[in-house]
Every structure is written in structure tokens, then in C-alpha cells.
Length: 99
Image (cartoon, rainbow, N blue to C red; front, side):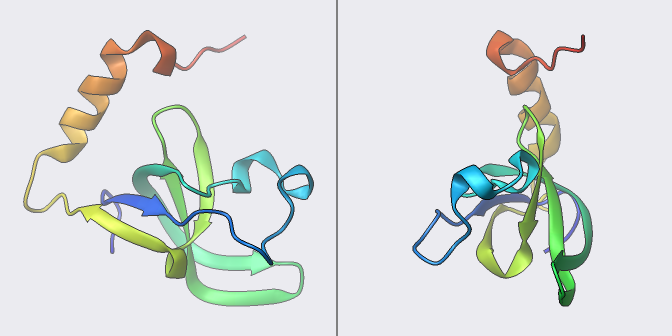
């Protein structure tokens, strides 16, 4: 997996942090998006080198653990990135608004 891959994060399951106690940017369960950054996963005192990815869902950025994502599309074989952003741009619900 690499920057630019289109991925899906697994669904929430028993044993995960409760949604209401999880920061918004870490609620990636069930989301799909494009990897824009890879790094180290840190939760409290836990540290897993190379296990963090930031994905862009087309609406917001979400931090996810790489061990729990599946690659849907590898951009080296398709022009998925351009198609992804073109499709998001024509959907007014996906437009990012700044105050």
C-alpha cells in the first residue's frame, strides 16, 4: 500500500473505542478514501511504526491503522485519483466549505 491508493477501512467492531469517545478524525470505520500520508500509529503509550495512514474521503481527513485497511484500487494501474476528485467535485454534498 502506498500514497494515492484508494482504500476501505474495516467496520467498527466490539472492543474498539466507543464512537462517542473517539475523536472525529479517528472515526474511520467503514470509510473509503485515498491515502495521502503514511506514518507511525500512536494510541496513548502504544506505538506501531509504519501502521498509520491518513485518508481523504472526499469530505474530510481521517486517521486509520494500516493493518485494518484493504486496497480497493492501485493508482499505478488506473487513473483513479483524477476520477475520484472529478466525481467528488460534481457532487455538491461533497464540497468542502470553509467558514
